[in-house]
Length: 208
Image 1 (tube, rainbow, N blue to C red):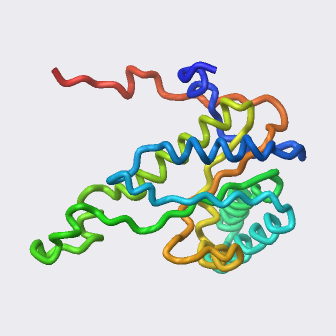
Image 2 (cartoon, one colour):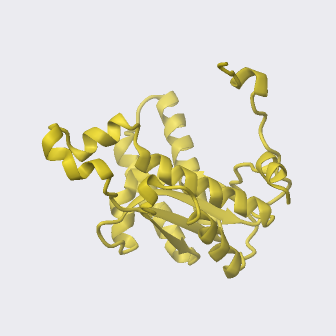
């Protein structure tokens, strides 16, 4: 497809067919993620593709258990919110594949003179509005667009991060990597309809 068409057709897909995803397609999705811009071209990412249904269900169980701890039972409204959080954080269990996006710390150019500035790496990262997080976002967008281009459905998840430490242990993720986000991938079950977006005139302004 043409790029603009792919961007316009992309939508978050949370219901998938049981059909497996071609392994070469999964590899291509990761390859395109690796071509995204990154802070200082650090490319601080790694992508762990999970296709084992037993493992995916175990991951969902871990996330559900953590949600139970973080959001204790309360009144009816709280229970409804908790149920929604669990649903949108664990639907990946029914996906043929989930790509776990890992990142490691990056070294900024300014890190070499931090002792002279009185700032820490985290201070500078905050001043720059967290370029490490923006870096991962760029990679994930490439993944979503590539999946759409291949006729697949995908959804960006941060809900599982609530149990990032527990998931890292289950998946045997080595230091210094940590889980940043996840992307569920599969063949969509039913038609995919992008949600309405704001008109360009509502979000566009030019300063001349």
